[in-house]
Amino acid sequence: MERLTLKVKLREKTGKGYARKLRREGMIPAILYGSHLKESVPLELEKKELKDIISHRSPHERILNLDIVNQKANRKREVIVKSAQRNWLRGGIQHIDFLEITRGEKLTTTVSFSFVGKTQGEKIGGIVEHLVREVEIECLPRDIPAVIEVDVSSLDIGDSLKVKDVKVPPQVKVLTHLEETVVTVVAPPPEEEAVAEEEKEEGVPAEEVELVDEKKEKEEEETEKKES
Image (cartoon, rainbow, N blue to C red; front, top):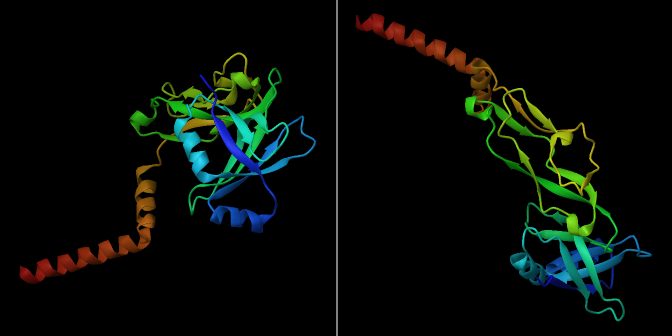
């Protein structure tokens, strides 16, 4: 299958002011890193161009061809997206870091976990806590997995999985500390605590609710005496 090509341009200026100007014009600032580059290369690309690539890109496709259209020599590079900064309030990608790869050379990157199955603990009221959602790995570019699946279906209340328990392809080396807890299942809070927590969320202190209930009961008792 032919690899997707993303067209970018060398960025004329750097700085936050120019980056804001680019975003207003429908562009995204970016930067290219690489172990064989003397210095990082500032870039810019059209949002529309990125959307087109994303829409055609397979989830398992990590490597892109980067075409620097206004560079005369060595304009085409093989890259992966090292990281992408998003603005969660306004939405959309605000900045992209590309990492140039060299075939036959290992690289370091992060891969997200994909949690599969429903835990045994959930079925009896347990709460699943995801503590680590991605892992740092080292491997050849062609061996970068799209995601790393974590099967949690066997976990009961009190059980947990650590990084060392996660199965990864043999050609992938995990760099994240192996003793870090990835996911755990904890017992639900006692019923009294849960009720108190619900009352807090509603903005009414638990003590105030109890006092109101007591007052209401007394009023009802007085009413009953008068009627009898």
